[in-house]
Amino acid sequence: MRKRYRTFGDWIRERYGCRVHKVCVDAGFTCPNRDGTRAVGGCTFCNNEGFSYNTRRGARSVREQMQEGMEFMRNRYKAQRFIAYFQPYSNTYAPIEVLRSRYDEALSFPEVVALSVGTRPDCVSPAVLDLLEGYAQQWDVWIEYGLQTVHNRTLERVNRCDTYENFVQIMEQTIPRPMRICIHVILGLPGESREDMIETAQRIAEFPYQSLKIHLMHVMRDTALADQYRRGEVSVLTREEYAERVADFLEYVPADVALQRLSADAPREVLIAPEWCLNRTETVRAIENTLERRNTWQGKRLGFPPPWESAPGRLELSGSVR
Image (cartoon, rainbow, N blue to C red; front, side, top):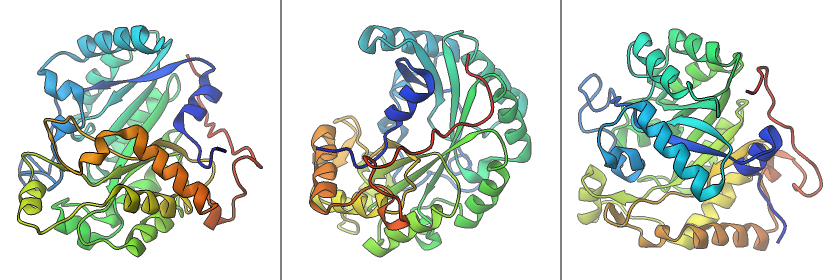
């Protein structure tokens, strides 16, 4: 079967020419949607135990997490280089000097070639962007923005306490800088139709971005969403429905954007629904079969030819690689 979308693995091989793996780091940050600055309790779907292995391990230093993670990746995947990935909560939500110390600790290993920082659009300031840009002279720098959807009514419904307009504003400030941008979206959010999800794809396609993570809305324990699910107030997509929505979305993703994720799951002890998302291989196969059946591909609706007919750009930006 011909590949109908571009993976982050493709970009890794082109950029580095060797095995490079992410090491996820929990740096002990929190979120303005949890500490009372904007709200308490967080987004209705959020349980970081389901997102990050290190969050379930308890408090350890950034250096310890990097050492353990790199050793695991070397032994399990024969990794040669690493990306320091600050994942849980909002990883720009701290004073600049605290951020600098955490990032410096992760980048102190010579095998680390990139820094990737996951955050919310409303937790990024010009000072944060200046700090991250400073690292781009020596390392590849990724900033991952949790947008989830362009629809403010949905953001309000899931207690996101952020807006699409904030995302637009911070994108305009980030784009001119020598950093790569990854956008996170969630498909199947409460109340969203197929047309709503397609509109999210269309509107983010108006910006230059280099990578994308597509998440399934899944229900995890100890969340407000779990309570809503038990009361029958929200439902989840079937695997077949989800595969169709991902295919719809990919048609509006520029061909040179690298897909870092096509779905989402959680540990069995954390997940409530849908159970089918635990089998990631079957989910990816369902997406690929749907693309094949529909004879469609990433970027088709934007006028891009099939991937097998045209090699996309390399996503190169200024800055050397160690």
